[in-house]
Length: 206
Image 1 (cartoon, rainbow, N blue to C red):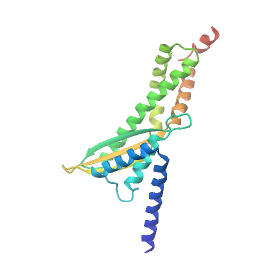
Image 2 (image 1 turned 135 degrees about the vertical axis):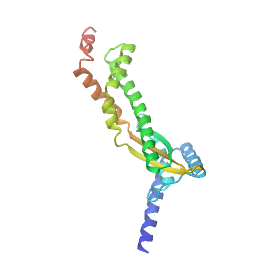
Image 3 (image 1 turned 30 degrees about the vertical axis):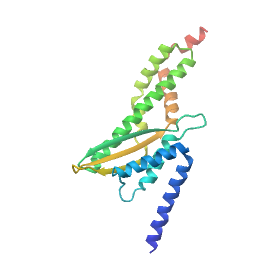
Image 4 (image 1 turned 180 degrees about the horizontal axis):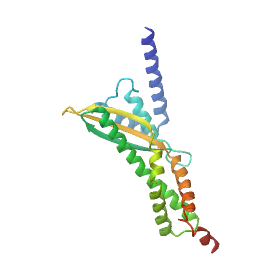
């Protein structure tokens, strides 16, 4: 009886958490969330025993994708991966890899834009800033990969297909603060490597 009460209380806690997250969404996003949840259930998506209910996970993922800071910028960089296979664990691993790849692409794009803007502020021309930014980000491949080692898992669910295989869906995220931190470190490294050796010369001419 105590065990039943415990799990009932735990479920209520998850339900309240999902409700609070949903209330933080705009009415338009709440409508989209309800529609997406209905579609997920209709398509046969389920969670494994012991995992948070599908509604809670989907609400958490939806909230992360919609969350912005005071300046209107995204708080999380979110990636989604899907993979199909005969073995759940193998499909899950591949889905995580795909999700990380999507995050990495977004991270590189945002880093390039941030570095490009910083260089423009240091009086580089637009084309030169763009070229240097891409070069710097390319050189930071290992640092970017390290940031993706432990992304925050927002959602994990699966469904059984007609052919007997299982399809796994993963949504995970990293903090958008990572972009500015990596961009700052990348520029500092570029200066140490003399990639930006002309910065002071350009400044002194103005």
